[in-house]
Image (cartoon, rainbow, N blue to C red; front, side):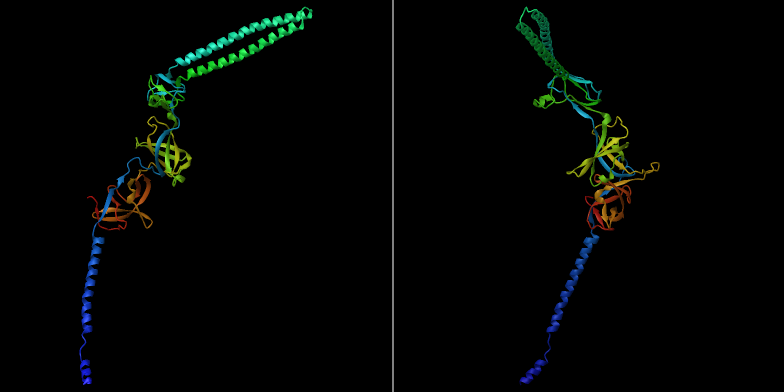
Length: 409
């Protein structure tokens, strides 16, 4: 009986394998669908969706740009090597002021006068002391002459045995005493004369004169105001009469990044362009490099001299300079157009400078030749045209042909 049950059990069909296989099929299909949807979403988001970017137009450099053959550009100011705020040597009240802004002055010219009444009184007192000392010395000189005659008479009488030695010694002592008084009086006269010279100097100090020839650029005091060589009396006392500038001492001072200071050398040719006259290129040359660096700004100061002065060049004017290489390009040839773009538009890919130019709703990767940097702009010598729009802000993985959309458009 048991054998019959075992035989019947061996004939039963096992459905476990077929059921397991049927359950795995839907899972495989679901996974495949999810992968397809994810791949499609990634392709749509990465390849088909437009990336937001910011663009800027390529600008044409018409004037004030770098000169042909420039190896370095910098900006600075016109400064005067001889510039002085003229003040008095003494504190006093201003009586007269003889200068106005823009007036030419010569060395030694009187610029202002202070109240000199006290100085004149002190001078008169010193002169009176000199006169008194001289009169006292004259009186002693007369007494000395009388004493010398008396001594001579005593000496003759002593030879005739009329007077004794004691009287001669007394007469000699009178002579020596008067000589000493006269010597002292001469010293007193010298001291009094020194006082006179001092008081005359004080009187001269009430007259303010120009230390050098130049142009008055400011008038800082008026008649009736107090003036002092040092700050005194708060805001009620002036410290200067006016400011004079020697226009022949004008030069340019620029700060050059220390990374590029090796491009600057003494007597190097320079072209300067004043901010006030952007179409006027002024020949100049390097005077020297100041032998110290600014650790805060990482710059080195360079002094530049104008080849020829001009009345239009004024102190504290802004100026841009281009340091030129030794061999100048042929200026007779027509200058090629030069463009500029923001520095953020130029990227370095595979060791080359490139920009992404907007073409419709896509970007075109284009190799360019970058020139000198000026502030937040960089000169582009080739690769772009005027009016084209370049990407200045966008994805770091932007590629040629990517779709983009302009932010804010």
